[in-house]
Image 1 (cartoon, rainbow, N blue to C red):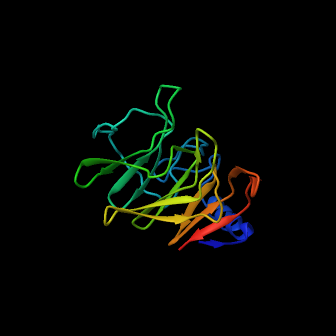
Image 2 (image 1 turned 180 degrees about the horizontal axis):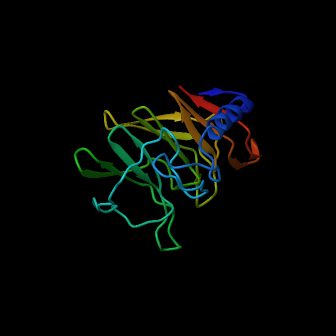
Image 3 (image 1 turned 90 degrees about the vertical axis):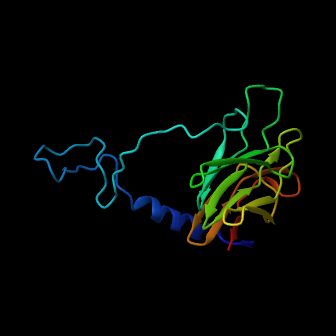
Length: 196
């Protein structure tokens, strides 16, 4: 992974955020002569989907605060907490293949992790960082799921941290900031790692 200056990343992502429709922007419906409205109106050029929610199964373990990402025809549901306050965050990863309409379950390989970041790029999903909830030691581990081969690999962040941000643009995956609770690296991080 490469370490880069955070300024480029902030400018790039702010550009992406500012180019969308604005909530209170006055718009007229193309098929109506009604006066302008500030209610929810589709943005020009964005398709409207009429969808019905259909149950497709259940998670292998009931839990909340789950994080998810998609790649290819797979959706991963990672981690989370169950209703028992005396348990650690879950290592469970439920994988739903929406083309085959099947569920599989696996586990993350390193300690109970909370505060990890998740994002995807192409056919890969990245689960980065986090901390062991028992002793608050952060990890630099990045678990990489390849949806096309249904396999896992591993990479490392430039230093261990949790509560970091993750995003992707094109074939680049970016991990930024976070905290380490580590005397060597300090409590807060300003590092940005790029995986490409």
